[in-house]
Image (tube, rainbow, N blue to C red):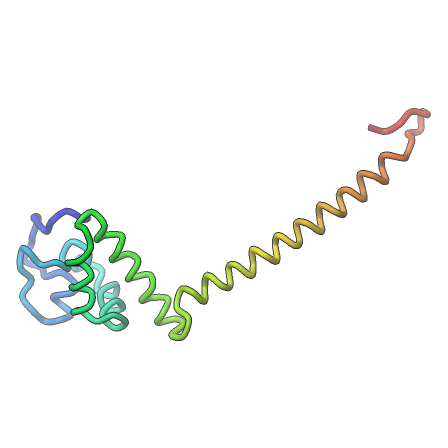
Length: 131
């Protein structure tokens, strides 16, 4: 997808269609905002603006542009869901969940150790130790 828009068709990219402008073969948006993904550009434009996205794409090395666009699209979608925190809010929720699960795992390991130590002192019905 990061290749140039060499397989240019008559259909404008999602960005040019949204901005109502002619999509040329050297359009910086075309490789990353295909016509079948109009919402992707609409979200990015709503949060960052077309001019800023264009500047970012020109400043980023060509081999990193697809990743940059995917990051912008992810952040834009997160900002639309949570305007204050964006994806930082989602990261915080996940970090709290990881901490909760780590505590639960530690408690479970303590319970297992207690259970194992209780079993260690018991003998079987045949007079030998269980093991």
